[in-house]
Image 1 (cartoon, rainbow, N blue to C red):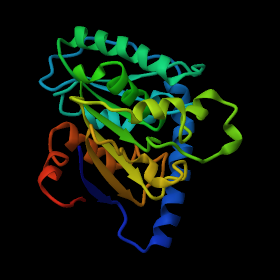
Image 2 (cartoon, rainbow, N blue to C red):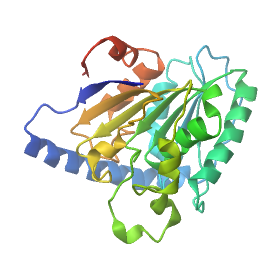
Image 3 (tube, rainbow, N blue to C red):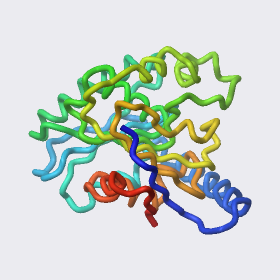
Image 4 (cartoon, rainbow, N blue to C red):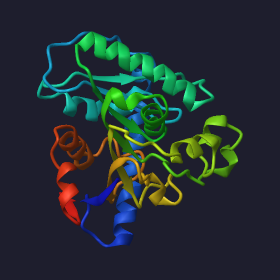
Length: 264
């Protein structure tokens, strides 16, 4: 069930200027991320954490990345102490996102047992969003996942960087791949709500609209972001605030009864 799209406008300037600003922002974010990258190489130590009233959140990074990409998002989501937040580093040597999704299933079960919660929320950047979606749709994860938020995830496949087709994970992110064909299959009764953030300035999504989720059986809200590129999606304060509102149950739900909505 597709819900009318939301729209986030980060920069109210002409398109050419927005593209330039988005490009500069990507460079700045990349520089900061390169400095932080070594801090996220190792898997974090997991703890029970204090009692929380909301479902725990598990963050899933993208291709060749690690949990350091979520430094700002993680801090914001856990700031009020109402939810337990963790980041999951999957193996950089994985060659099949379906294997990673099975590992994710075990991690979610362990997280639920450790926190005493029945359901979790997943937030995935880029490839991490596909891993989360595969778990939800194909491995029965909708019984455990309340909300799946994806940031710049190639749900319909991306054509960018054809020279990287030698890598099996990249091939799985191509239009028409076996994985994407499985995700396009019927998913009746899927209980997870999906919120997909996408941007026309996301240079790794080709075409940019591929980061939208288009599936008749899924409860979906597609959120368009303006003026933000791929790397900045998990770090930009506008997106971070919107993700927090989604997980708080504010914003995305209102789109069910309106033709359009704007999140400033």
